[in-house]
Length: 136
Image (cartoon, rainbow, N blue to C red; front, side, top):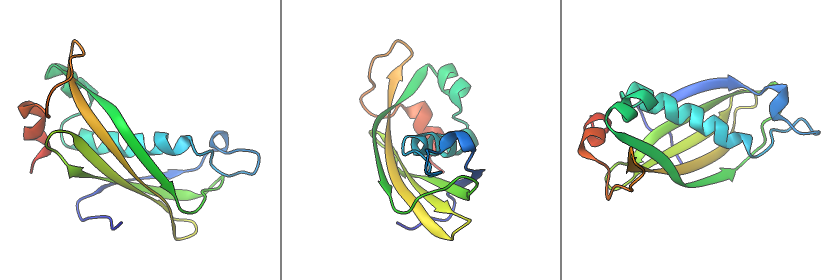
């Protein structure tokens, strides 16, 4: 997986409360790191939570896949890059977690967002007002 030009990146440091007894990041925390990058990506596109709600929609994670390549340890600096891979019927986001301390890729991931109405009814396809903000 190659990070495309225009991807949004956030840099973080592994905090003590994210590691296990071996000082390795517990695998469940990677999902939190992905969410931080995805929300920054959506925020830059004008689709932060308040904007999505103002449009009358909600966006939910329907699917996620994470592949661990090498561990993150307590105190490591790392970068999470996120970019849109597909934006038609659903919104697919791809990610790379890169350990800046070791210079190694830590993980790759993909998540799928679907849209519902404010009342929770699943939208068939991504609604036009959201697509308008996602497309360049």
